[in-house]
Length: 336
Image (tube, rainbow, N blue to C red; front, top):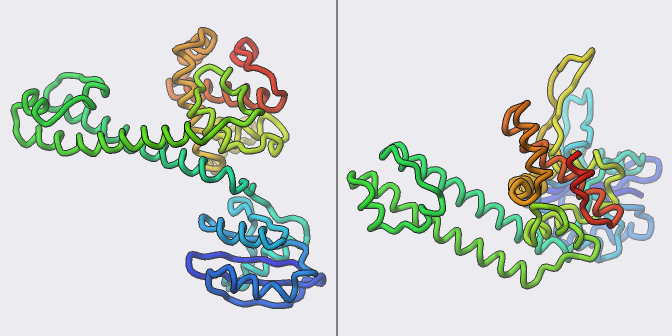
């Protein structure tokens, strides 16, 4: 038997198919682990695997069923094909379709990150969220200040401002107030970022196979931990191109007769790895002469953003071989 579960925010639909792909049991259940386990229990010995389709809230169900001894599969929602030519579909059809794909051996699967790694990964994702918000506020303040005074100011100086300093720099009371009200938000975000970093650095440790990441230019402890947690198992990427694509470091387009006919889904992949290698690229040009030379050569021939993306792609490809072959990062080969 094969089981497909279409998971939603407050309920799930479970469909169990037999070897002939006929219905054995189908029912909508509340999002309660005990209820799902009770429904599956009569068929436990005959169930080959259980596949779950969900966009965000699958941790509790997959971990719970896996802990109960079921072989769990996570549906890759971006690759799973839908019914074609159907006039009407609902959750029952979706759950049965998942079970059918599982039975036929053509179910596109997502990677299930081990539970012990998810805590640090999600905390680092929260840090990334805070960093993006702080950067947005700082850019907004800098733009507003330049527009009002005609003077440029670095972001580090803005973070050191207080209300009194702002009123001294700007004569218009309302303009000064517009800047001053955002400064406490920036300070709170900075404090939270530091708190997360302190917690992560105290508990999170690079696994042995990921320690060589520190030999890559621009990758420190925080970026190394981010890459480790988001990559998880480098063995799931058969080729360097698969990893680079997963890091969103390659362009997405459809070509025919040497002409661009359109673009694919550019958001396929891991946005956190994309961010991590982009950050590493900006640090690498400061400390690695070969990276700086490569970036300058690319920038002279193309748009600056294209040059940064090309450098992050070089770093991602180099780190793939570091992790796969367990060798130090070689700038000579990476930036050739």
